[in-house]
Image (cartoon, rainbow, N blue to C red; front, side):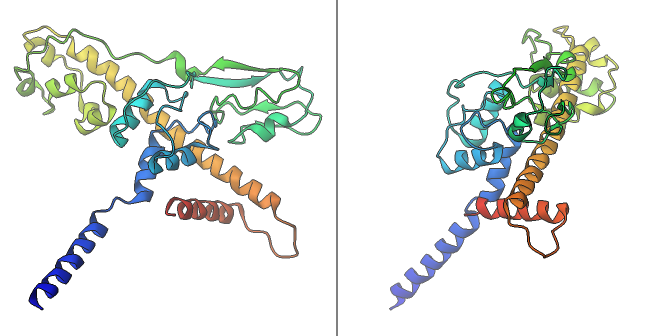
Amino acid sequence: MLMTVMGLAIGIVLHWAQQQLQPDTHTQVDAINQLLPQTQCAQCGYPGCRPYARAIHAGHATINLCPPGGETTLQQLAKLTGQPPAPLVSTSDPLVRAVIRESECIGCTLCIEACPVDAIVGAQQKAHTVIQGECTGCELCLPPCPVNCIDLVQSPAAVNIVPVAKAADDCVRCGDCVPACPRGLSPVQLYWDRSDMNRLETLRLDDCIECRLCDRVCPSELPLTNIFVQAKEQLQLERQRKKSARHAESRHAAREARLALKSQPVTGDKLPSPGDLLTRARGERRSRDNV
């Protein structure tokens, strides 16, 4: 009898522990989705970045199906999910934007219907135009255009990208630069983690005042300050990329809500506001994630 009670108690404890330690599906899908470029281009074979994130989490898709994300996103997904970073299925340039040659546009609206973030505006038989700040460069508007009047051009953000300096790894980790920093930073850690944007945030790269004192005491004569300046530029670009990605995802959700409303029959009831539709779409998305 005692053994039975003990076995039952152990079973209850183990079940409770399993429930407590089980990863939160919604949180994991969000983490994967945040690494994706949010172009909503469907090149992965899924109708948007979040469905692809759900498929990765469920084990139904590999992590190498996102051409716009490139090698950087592939490596980040590999680190997060534990999947081996297989070669990308294809390559793409996420730093391009669509431009319509309006003098040749016939106003067919096919590109408007294809755009996943509603970045193209225009009316039937009127010239269309692309809202440059909203275009994600997904290229989905190109195939349906019957007169081939859409070009892909380099976005302004692409012009200012400066790669992090590739200094020789001659750092001996002596630590002489640490007490020399007037802001209490660890230049040696900033140097070794200069390509990891998340680590640079944690190590407070923004607090660097570029005084060059770390350069003076470095026995290897590494150009630490120049490396940190370029890393700051990369960090700012990464922040802007994340901000743009969140905005694109929001526009995609709003588009889905609009299309859902359009497909519903018109009744005498009061139509919901755009805010209500967006809230409903997000709620339905979370419900799907938790299934």
